[in-house]
Each structure stands twice: as structure tokens, then as C-alpha cells.
Image (cartoon, rainbow, N blue to C red; front, side, top):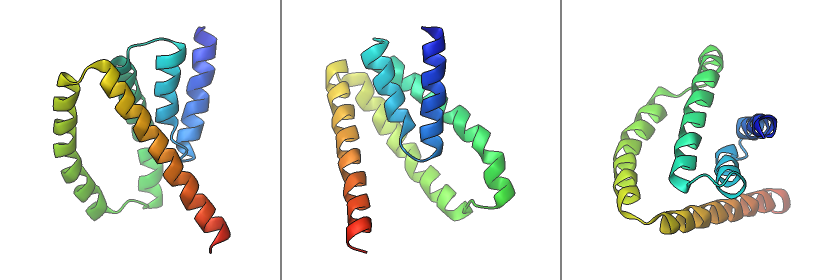
Length: 123
């Protein structure tokens, strides 16, 4: 199973690098196939994301493709969001958190499909 996990990790990292939401796929893999508890899978996903972001940072710095004002705004707005999320995660039952995350993924997918259809047919 370790080889399959490695291959899935490479696939997820590749999809994430293309902007296809690899993190959501990683959580689905860990929860549904590997039967890891949802909160543990989300923690693994966060570590995976941080490592991926740190690896991508030198490339973005070299290309000068980062906007410092946007980074500061997003960081400042993310901090309260992280705090609220942690508070909710500590009181929500795991099944409720799992359903919320599933609905979030479904809604994200629908919105992405809508944007692509709109761009393709109505531009």
C-alpha cells in the first residue's frame, strides 16, 4: 500500500500544482480509501499544503509573481478564519465536519464547472 500511497501523493501534488484542488482529493483518498479519521486527514492535508507551498515559493520569488499587498491582506484575513475554524472543529462532531467538508467540495466543484462553461460558451 505504501507504493500506492506514494503514487497518489505524486498525482495529488501534480493536480494541486495545476490548480485542480489536489488537497480535496488527498482528503477524500485518506478518509474513504485509507479510512483515516477526518480530522487527521485534514491535518495531513495541511502539512502537505505547507510543504508544497514552501517548495513553490522560490520559483514565485524568482519570477516576481507575488503581490505583497494581496499576501498581507490574505494573511490578515486568514488568521481570524483559522481561529474560528479551530473553534468549530473542537465542538463539531466528526460526522458533521465531514458533511460540511463534503458540501464545500461539491459547491466548489459546481462553481468551477460553471466558470469553465461560462468562459467557454459565453465569452
